[in-house]
Image (cartoon, rainbow, N blue to C red; front, side):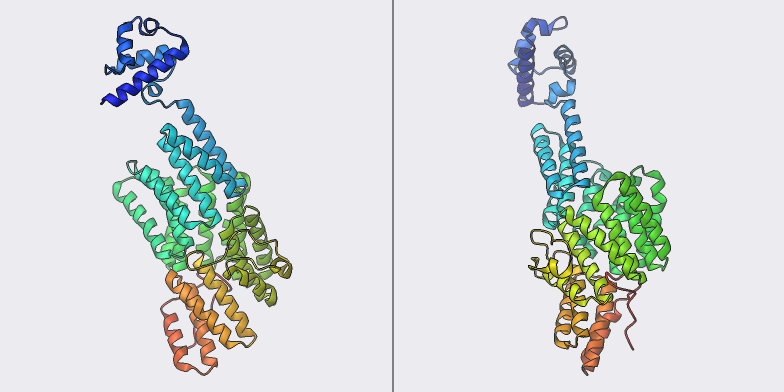
Length: 468
């Protein structure tokens, strides 16, 4: 006890609990203390010792912690159970519904003073916002967790740091995403806090931005370290996420069959855990593998499955990203009109009426689900790239150039090396055919700064090298 206010609060708490139980001051005090002592304590005029508080807690039938803090272990257990229920709702249902449950836990935990449970609820709210594509809201929640746990060991803050890094990745800020993850890894290693779970979380999250930036060696190394850590971690969901990330590096090495096998392991785990969003991501990645390998029929089937699952969960941003990759497959299968009808509404930020009828797709996800420089920038660039290809194929060079330049503007901000290299090749080829050789050479020179390889582009087969 360190001050008048805590003493007063404890006195009031003792009075309330004693009254609720029908004890007199003498009955509560004996045999170790007197009624006068209890009276003085209840008035907040004496600072009780730990021994006195433990005696009173035992007589009142509460824990020492509950008497001194007002927080019951039963409340903590109840709040943790509520967090588990909210996590289950996020795994199997819509993120908006889960967010309501997490918000209730957050508010009650704050009222009762349970920092750990409040942090868990805020983390859940951040994950819900990631799923719905509200990236600024997601970052705010993850930052709130980091502030709340600022005095805790670093491993406790790693899930929030990982969440913030993913939010920046989805916004197209690849370099900053990598910076956050690498800084946390360095701090963990420098402090000697070798926490396998925390490190596995970070290395797994780093694979995607590394691959998008063309840092293949780093991505492969992160995958190797993640695989080495996996036996020390008893979390099937995290292990499944690791297999999903490792598959991306295997594609870059041309090991398509192994990549598909890794995704099959992840899919099996997600099916057992009934984590629907991550299961959809497995179908998404398998569609990506088949698209890169030229198996377009299987790619379309997997991407449609992923799209339907994500749309049913109202995971808006993920849904439109899958739709861009599905449009690529449709174009490569000769269904250009379907691909174009799927893409145009995404860049307009609102679904176009009739798009579902035109493409045979399910109804577009509600709310604003468009792709912008701040929301799915890599896939926004991919959508413009595809529309440029479609315009180029129909002989509309002006529209093709506009889309390629729009894509270039989006992708240059992200640092997505493979996509940039491929796009510069397409733009250079277009300009060369138009007889604009100087402009074509400028495009090729820009592209030479970015090396594309299998697994580094968002769409299509491995891009060709630019002509010299």
